[in-house]
Length: 263
Image 1 (cartoon, rainbow, N blue to C red):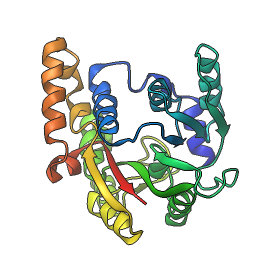
Image 2 (image 1 turned 60 degrees about the vertical axis):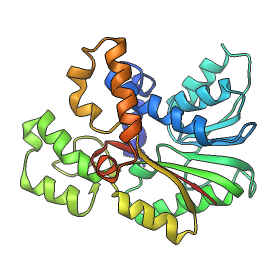
Image 3 (image 1 turned 45 degrees about the horizontal axis):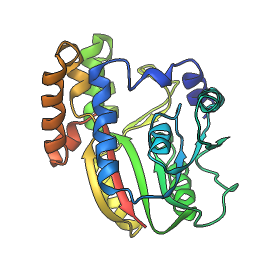
Image 4 (image 1 turned 90 degrees about the vertical axis):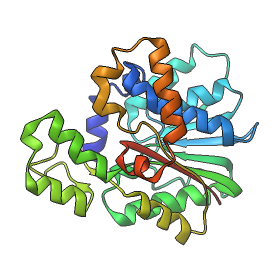
């Protein structure tokens, strides 16, 4: 995980969902889904919170938030921002595969918005899920984001032709795994899942699937066009995306995807 931490220490995660409209689609779609399904007054663990864009949004809505992340810079950023807020939030630098500082069934909702797609080892992904479920109350919501393996190759190969090679396409499609020392690595250690795999995994854990949707769809591939639109045009796009984001074909073709289940 050191390579993942190093990657994020040198990346401005706090700007990822706010710098342009194409990136905002993910955030706007996600909070819309949250508002439709999250119970009021819930105690939430944002596990692998990044720099806290969702944690801050939910805290502003009155939720009791705990934000953790494996990257020290992210938690430092959150703590600095909290100095400007009127509410409090518990924070900690923490590995998502070890939540032992929390008691069993502590939280009403556990967000896994970031860790899953950086755990390239299946055993580590299983530990992350086991720990998240352990600290989640019975009947609570487990929220997991992942990156669809069917989006990745079309995106990177059209963004930079040096990645347009048969080996990388086959590797991503068949295994979904890319490590930092791979000659074709364009990011850091990552695991890209399929929608069927995620639904099967939830079913095997006896987690009732409540929602499964594309967070941003193909918006990242259309960023230049989307960023040129006015406010009305952008809203039309967002409304259409939200209306169609649960179609199976849209989910598979999406960059970021979210699956929400009940323990």
